[in-house]
Structures are given as structure tokens and as C-alpha cells.
Image 1 (cartoon, rainbow, N blue to C red):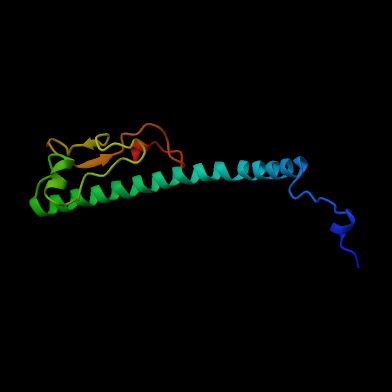
Image 2 (spheres, rainbow, N blue to C red):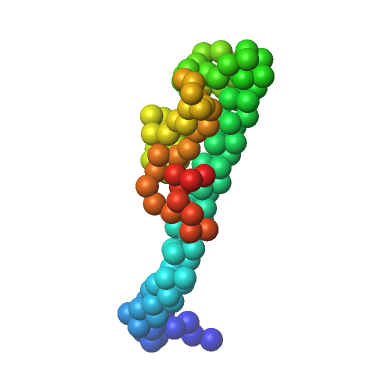
Length: 132
């Protein structure tokens, strides 16, 4: 038996993909991305809203504990942190700042009775962030 190399009949085989194959793969990837990307951004918005609700709950709980222990409301959110009712004043995840919280004072008194987000806009449930 004679080898193909000895006879000069060796054929070169091209290894790789054709342009059409690459374009088909890219089109499939683009179609999948159009489905995935909007869901990703929706999930990040939901995550920010969940963190906002948790931060508000933690601050309101700290305000109630402060009032229960000392018989008065804190003068600021920083006082809650300095008295160690909170480790630190949390970020408003919608605005990304610590100083955007809106403070509600108790009737005819000074201090912090309640706290709301200072973010503009509405959540996924249609309610304003400022009402949470």
C-alpha cells in the first residue's frame, strides 16, 4: 500500500468555520441577548427596591428602639448610628446617597419620627418611592 504523501495526492483540509456559520451563530446569540438583557435590568431594579424596603425597615426599627429606651426621638439619623442603634446610616439604593433620606418629625416636637426615601420616581408596584 502506497501512502498518499508518496504519491503526491495529499489533499489539504481547511479547518475552521465559514462566514455563514459564524453569522448564524452571532444571530442566534443576538436573539438570546434580546430576551435576557431586559430581564437582567428588571431584576436589578427589583433588587434595589428590596434593599430600599429593608433599609427603611431597619431604620424604623432602630427609631422605635431608640424611643423605647430613651423616651425621646433621635435628633438625626446620625444619632442612631452614634448611639449604636445602627452600625451606620444606610445608603438609599435608588439615589446611591446617605443624605437623601426624608425625615418626618413627630407632631409638635423635634427629632426623627419616621423616614422615607428621597428618590424620585415610582417602584415596580406603581407607588412613589417617597411614600415607602
